[in-house]
Length: 264
Image 1 (tube, rainbow, N blue to C red):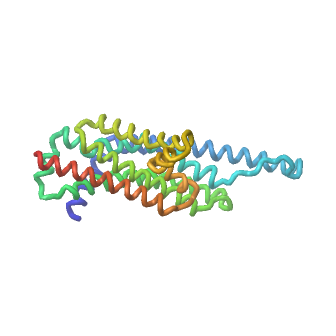
Image 2: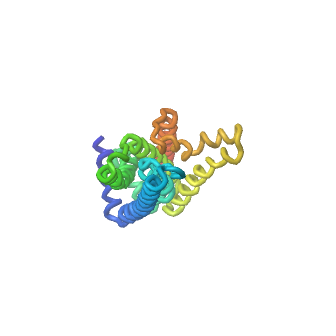
Image 3: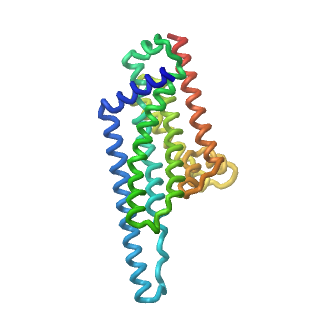
């Protein structure tokens, strides 16, 4: 654990001693703030129209009032899930590619530290930065609980956040794998983005081509497994998918590191 902690602190300092973490935080939080404002404004407008129709026509022809938690708070998590396509590649691309380009990966291999400890330290550092982004956005839930407490249901929101966290963890595991394959950060980032984009788009095949092919694509799609979390439902099958996805690519990242040490 001492070696993992040392690598973890080193990577965390590297993130916050460079502009990368701050740029990602600002980008992520601004996008979430814009959509929160849009969803909140839409809910206020619909509420006013609903009250007006109820007072003038005793509810005849009034549009049903949408659920605040579903529209605003869980809607924000849907936006977060999409934004991860852009954030995670930038967050993970430097982890091993930079070490290779700078030549410090060979120096790291000479230390009395195992490959799995290096991998764990780097992965946990990136995961901490990502978790910090999610933590900052939880202020919207706290604000909603203060402003509209009777319309804010925290358990479904927590389930949605769990889904975003698991998806981000799975994305990071692939980003680490891509970064371990090359010494070019841009290549690692583009490979991660392209792969995650394919895993997102493949989910639409089930809508276009229903049947066996559609079912297979739906099971492969990372985003299709997020739907239930986004609705506030925690399904063990979807939970297992993200855990296995993460372990799968971390395992292959470890194999790549071991092969690099052997060749070195």
